[in-house]
Amino acid sequence: MDFDDSNYRKIVICLVAVILLGVGFWMLKHRHPGVFLGVPDLIVDERREVDEKSPSAETSVPSADAASKVLSENLPHESNDGRIDINSATFEEFKSLPGIGPAIAERIIRYRGVNGRFDVVEDLTEVSGIGDKTIEKLRERLVVR
Image 1 (tube, rainbow, N blue to C red):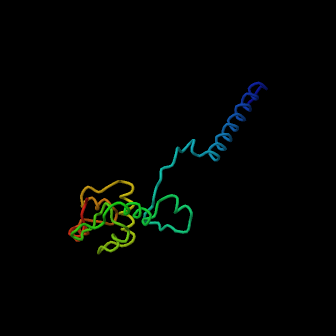
Image 2 (image 1 turned 90 degrees about the vertical axis):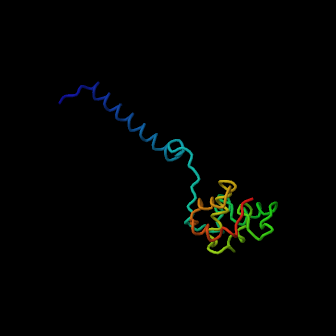
Image 3 (image 1 turned 135 degrees about the vertical axis):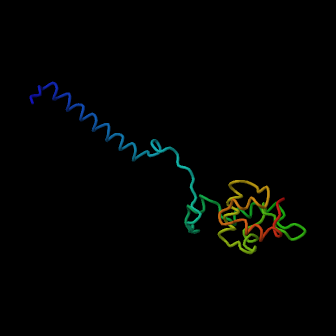
């Protein structure tokens, strides 16, 4: 095949332009990934244990103790009959319930902080690790105010 100089130059210029464009997009992607990916959502993996000493753990998600302090300052926790109000209970109060350990107590407080108040006791089933059997076992000890 015979290429005359003008066609050969056009092909070389097009290839160089494509390569330069590719390098430009690659650099933009690596220096500013948000342009291509958008703003990332906050994703919390509840199965991963957070190291309390790391600064990211303090700034990303408030601890259960901090959330319970804020809620506990103004609201009564126990009703006159000894039942615990799930909308104002502290981490320690949840932990004192049978079948509720530290992980589930923290999930309840975290869920309450993100989604707001519970309307009925059965809303606790929305929290990972709490099922209908747990609700039935705790129903007489819980109240929603």
